[in-house]
Amino acid sequence: MINELAGKQAPKEILEEIDALLKSYYTNKPDAKEQTQKVTFGTSGHRGSSTKSSFNENHILAITQALCEYRKNAGITGVMHIGIDTHALSTPAQITALQVFLANEVACKIAKKEEYTPTPVLSFTILESNKNTDILNDGVVITPSHNPPSDGGFKYNMPNGGPADTDVTSLIENRANQILQNDLVDVKLISKDEIFNSSFLEVCDFITPYVKALDTIIDMDIIKEANLKIGVDPLGGSGLEVYKKIQEIYGIKLDIVNEKIDPTFSFMSCDHDGKIRMDCSSKYAMASLIKLAKEYDIAFANDPDFDRHGIVTKSVGLMNPNHYLSVVIWYLFSSRNWGEDLGIGKTLVSSSMIDKVVNSLDKKLYEVPVGFKWFVDGLYKGTLAFGGEESAGASFLRKDGSVWSTDKDGIILNLLAAEMTSKLKRDPGEIYQEFEEEFGKSYYRRVDAPASFEQKAKLKNLSVEDITSKTLANEEIENIYTNASGNNASIGGLKVTTKNGWFAARPSGTEDIYKIYAESFINEEHLELLIKEAQALVSKSIEN
Image 1 (tube, helix red, strand yellow):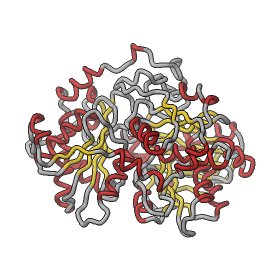
Image 2 (cartoon, helix red, strand yellow; image 1 turned 90 degrees about the vertical axis):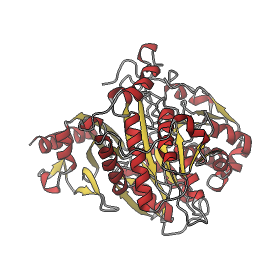
Image 3 (cartoon, one colour; image 1 turned 30 degrees about the horizontal axis):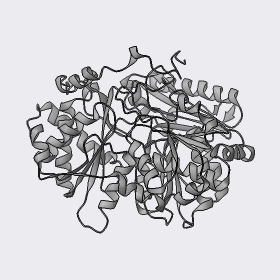
């Protein structure tokens, strides 16, 4: 059901009350016994809202103290790099985290006041800081990604630059909840007034070194020489200064259509459900940039922490993330002189068009569960050339095959669209249309359905034997997976495939819903049937 506000500028009456949000951050005290108020690390850290008592000062105090203890036990003694995005709760959460880190005598680096740090910039910085040293450095990104303005998020990135795996986050999560239950008695703390007088704190420039290194991964010269008309919408996010620095260092003309930083994100077009959500893969949230598509040779946007990309072309408007990732893989292996044995990573809910492109390149596909963390090791070690997920997040190697970032990087994916348009004289939308002529047309959709905590737990633990049907959407079922084919890791749900289609179902880590992803290479009617039968199969399995 599409809300009547979808694609329209957010009206004043739905804007977040920032003062109330900030007050709740400090005054609301979470009940550590209440499931919805506990520390919970999903695929991208702990997220919540202060008004719902799921992201408050006490959460950050507990998480940060748990993280200090983890670092000590793991022998991580170097610098903790801390980045924030433009959500209202990010700045107070950084202050809280610094109070704890500095009290624990953890050396910290942050950007200067009123500057923000994109997730990929932090990942890049961690990797650079760990070159030619035996001391391990790591980082935290305080962001709820594309979530609404009411939300906050806290994500830990390991010394390999990528988001911490579940074996680490579960330790931090469990210890943080223990600290909450013990009324924070184990938290070491300095006052806010002491923060900027601490000898353990350094204020630095994260952005310039990142931008200066961009020519090692993107052909910045060809973009400048092509003199494309490029439109950029940072969507009020943390990377506005990155684009300004690109203009300064490389002389590339970028038309930044929106330079506003506003914690209410009042300039946004509402998403499909009428909420403000800075989702650069949503045609509703991206409505204002899509309207300008014909004015530019290529245009792009990012979410608030800049780990996601949104590509707008003259040929098709906003590209479906699956479509763009297919083009990216083809282009990278057509333009980079990488080794023969490099793999290509995708999440199991991403389009099978990627499989078809990878097969045509005669490359190895590495399919994993949802979560970018599954690509970290391969990108870090240089065994994966590319890792991407259907939610518009990806990263890839530098031109020489060395690691760039081990977290999602929406900046390089946007710039790559400008590079390929400059070099090929065709935009990515035109290239994808050629794929459809060669491989067939993909019909892809994700739908959400309500599910209780108990039902989500059942879905997470389904086995192959729980699916007794032999057919799906009038085709014989070929495979049923509860573990990903690439790394044999648990899906936390299941995937069912046929000759011309598939569906995957998994519970949400943050909402009372489960998600069904489905794709058909026949037609829209076949897709509808896939979704209908998938919902019936899942409902039967989790309600018994």
